Amino acid sequence: MEVSSVTTKTIAGTNGSLAAVAQQYRDELMNHILPFWLRHSKDEANGGYFTCLDRFGKVYDTDKFMWLQGREVWCFSFMYNHVAQKEEWLNMAIHGANFLEKHGRDKEGNWYFSLTAEGQPLVQPYNIFSDCFATMAFASLDKASPNDRYKQIALDTFENILRRRHNWKGIYNKAVPGTRNLKNFSLPMILCNLSLELEHVIGKERVDSFIPEVLHEVMEVFYQPQLGLILENVHEDGSFADCFEGRVLNPGHAIEAMWFIMDLGKRRNDEALIRKACNIMLDTLEYGWDKEYGGIFYFMDMQGHPTQQLEWDQKLWWVHVEALVALAKAYALTGDERCAKWFLNVHEYTWNHFKDLEYDEWFGYLNRRGEVLLNLKGGKWKGCFHIPRALYQVWNTLEGLK
Image 1: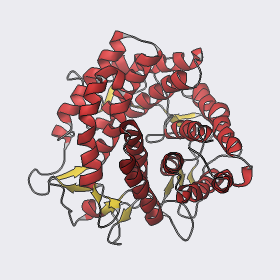
Image 2 (image 1 turned 180 degrees about the horizontal axis):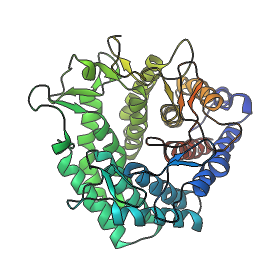
Image 3 (image 1 turned 90 degrees about the vertical axis):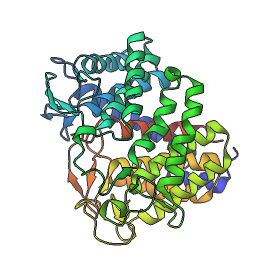
Image 4 (image 1 turned 90 degrees about the horizontal axis):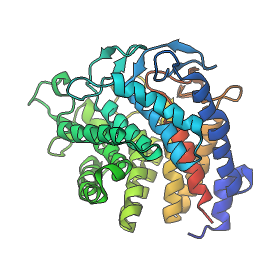
């Protein structure tokens, strides 16, 4: 699409040109993010990756979390497939996949939450997102290094996700059945993206038949039009639940989900869906932005009540980088000037607060004022995923603007 000179200047900010902004994202990915994980996370003795890395890349805990293992396999496979066919990236992905294949699942094929460094199970497979990122990992690796075994693991895991999706915690669910049955936004949100990641494994026809189901869940069930916002939890029938869980908003989840939806809209050539996703994303960003200190709140209560989450006002890395992806894609697809202005705002906050100016990789956790809370570069929740994926997506999207 054609980009106005005014908007180009807005997105470019002080860097002078769209090309310069795109280059900034590319250089950060190639020179400061991927090299950090290549240098510091590979467990040469046991296989897999260390993700608990301090500011300098030193390992401070050796437990291995399956969803982060899968994410790192996916990341290096994806970069091999889409950026450059570097042998060190492919070898890094295969290294992690071998560990996952050997140790990651129980006898029923469910992926554990965590293992010891050597691969002994630590935490039971209560979290289906371990499975989601395992299937993403092996599907992406199968593209990079075609292998029937990788493809079968991806397919088997995906089928297991679908079997479990209506009660994915199973025996590990702490809620008493029948009292307040809620369903959560996270899984249908991830399935929007996962369906496209697995297209070469499950086939175009199956993806096309699956998309309407997840679109309905995200855009008709969890989206509340009277609010203009997406809820994290609703009753099983889709109605509002007036309790802590039912009132909670996670702006980052909603914003990230909207770029998944925009990708689906682009695939379906559905301009109305793209526009709706863009508007939800902008409404969420406006609602979730901290007007006093800047940045996006982690959790909020839709009625303004105190949240259960004590960390509600923290500013997290993934929320902000996913917002940059959503804004870049939304502008590229719609030309909406609001996206360009918000992009510059979020860009400046993110690069000024999360990027470590002295050492590679970025900080993940800030307090409300934007000060670093934890100077780790990786841990139980932060790994090699959101930042490299976002840097690639923004770089690729801005390069596509003319």
